[in-house]
Amino acid sequence: MKSEPRILVVDPDEEERELVAATARQISAECDWCTSGDEALRRIAGVRYDAILLDVLMKDNSGYELCRAMKADSETADIPILFATTRNRAEDVLEGFQALAFDFLVKPYRPRELRARLANAIRLRALLEEMKARVRFYERVLRVGRGLALARTAAEAEETIGRELERLVDAFGAHGVAVESAGRAIFSVGDQAGSLAAEIPFDQSGVEGTLRVWRETAADSEERVRLLDFAATLARGMARHGFAVRNGTAASR
Image 1 (cartoon, rainbow, N blue to C red):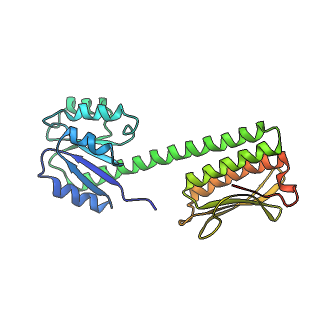
Image 2 (cartoon, one colour):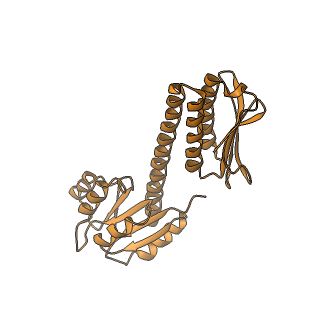
Image 3 (cartoon, one colour):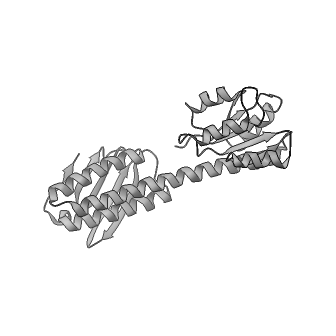
């Protein structure tokens, strides 16, 4: 289950704190507060934030400097940063965007605008995370395909499939997975008990079967699409090495 979005507010002026906190609650987000750039850097080292609302003027360093520091760090580069300022000069806005800020807000905040801009930042963060997850998953699919294509024996192919199924369990936070074909379990990893999160039928390269995933939460539509692509890649490798037609074959990890 996904946790609520989390916003870090970096602002030495606490007058707007109640408004920002209330706005965060309206979009089902949690809000943390700090008053200096140094404290902000310590916070982001240990907490995953979905957006940062950053005052341009602080005592220890400017918001621009802090923004550039966070954008230079691969761990925090994807966090959308919204600058807040009492000034509304074109040069301030330009400097903020040159520092790779996502958006700009002028104080005092207008509640509806604040809510919309924070919601947009959180949405962007979620999209970026989803894109990264897709890339990682399809890199895994390509690796499976290459491994099965290069396998010289059925034993090497079996080792590749078992290893990638173990990685699939980790990637999906699953208890276990199993690949069934010709009415029998050809491969299985982990615990095939409890809630069935996904049951993915596949028919590829003359191999029909089902990929099953056990997890507490059901797979969403995007995860099911990925699992189908993964299963199709496995099926092509299984056809190449004859796993679907080997009598009684079953491999477990």
